[in-house]
Length: 332
Image (cartoon, rainbow, N blue to C red; front, side, top):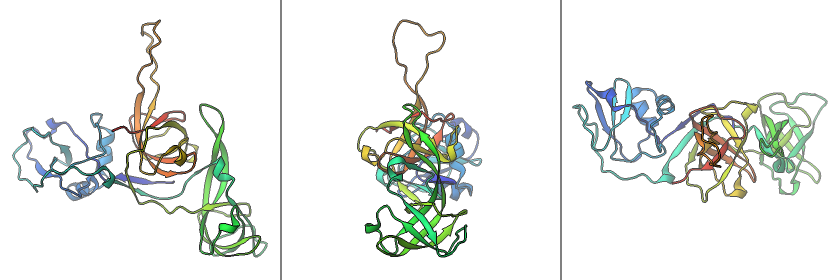
């Protein structure tokens, strides 16, 4: 999924409390339904303020929840979480609300953009192909009538919408070397208008780039503007196998592809941690086979799942991420 910007709507971030020393602060008490996106927009006129705070704050523990009753201080263009029992500078409270924990399934993120730049080997076998149009033109554009060879013609109906894409380079698993799938380039969308015993007839509804005969098609997934975060049904561990456009070094807001999917129990909205095995230092004592804890590199949220693969959006990264890094569902 091509995601240009993203915002987690229910995270809150910290700055050192010492930043408040000697300055008047405006104190606000979180109430049910509040989001950091809205708070940043309301008090700082900048809804994109919170990501910089989070990415530069190593003390943030579990940023996935905020609770009504928690207090923040708005001072000198910054937002700070206040300790429950801490003293704060004199200020006029903006509101007071009874504390009530938010349910985890009410938390959402907002993601702008659409398009999935990867397809698994299993999915590719079920796709269709654009085989012809009504004349001899080479390039096909919006409004053109086209004919399709379908992977499931019997299940195709008038009104069905499909995505058009070209197949790119193969993606091998970074650990096993086995073929996982292919990078793809999104070309546009089309809508079926009728079917015959051998082909489906469709009209191209959008063209992102040049479309030619041989373009592949798969069911269209509308862009997700909001995704509810949810706890995974079971502990899962997998591997980061690729990224959008084949990027090598990855970070915050990048789109990554995993070797876990719906058949493994992974769901859209599941939170993931990303880690890497920790290597012993050159001065480590030798002789004991000790496995050191992984280095925690970042977190991500699943945005789309398929049978054996999934797409995720990196929410936070403390260091560059690479193919082969581990991913695992977030424990309580």
